[in-house]
Length: 281
Image (tube, rainbow, N blue to C red; front, side, top):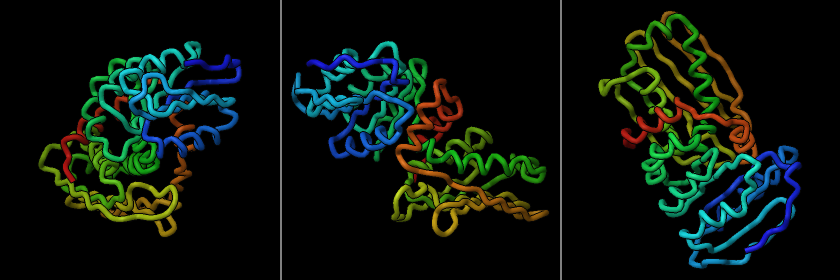
């Protein structure tokens, strides 16, 4: 397997994308859209071949049909050791994921059904900085709710919430959000967690639709406004307060730009993921 010599001075990171062929095209488009950030992409789909031909473009190398047992060696030979390596995992065998985690400076999980990847992820926490792209999609939701805790009535009620209800188009994102709250607020099993799944169309749709938190004397809601571009964060109780915040650009390019700006472990994510695996839909 050969590849062209590339001027490393124009790149800031190597991004290794692994997944089914039908999920590589939009990933390639997202990385191309990053433009001036300057990433070198290695895109690999799994198959049965030990040494399939590599298609080399200016900023990307694509390999289709590589047998999983050879994936680790291929990435090790193609990555530029002088650059940090981000592995963008969009699906594949668990054993290959184990191998790649040892090469990654950052591992970004992004699979439709994350159970196996989530189950394996805690074993990587001491090796590399692990996250899930759902976590980035939840950034504005987490930030909006966290800001509400700056209000004295909310802060004083932090230990008295008894019910969390989430309407979501992505049940796994809802589990992750609920896991974050459970870990941050140290909830016990006495706090009821209810997740309802709904269909949602449209491009770059937020994974959540509405979040409701209930305490004896306080009610909080995060509600995606019509059109999907803004989030209304409301507190009702002794006083009423509403904040409107933008949800931002949920495109793959925007999300990956955010991920490329992170280098360290995220303890809040790690704890949220651990808790999420205990939450059923």
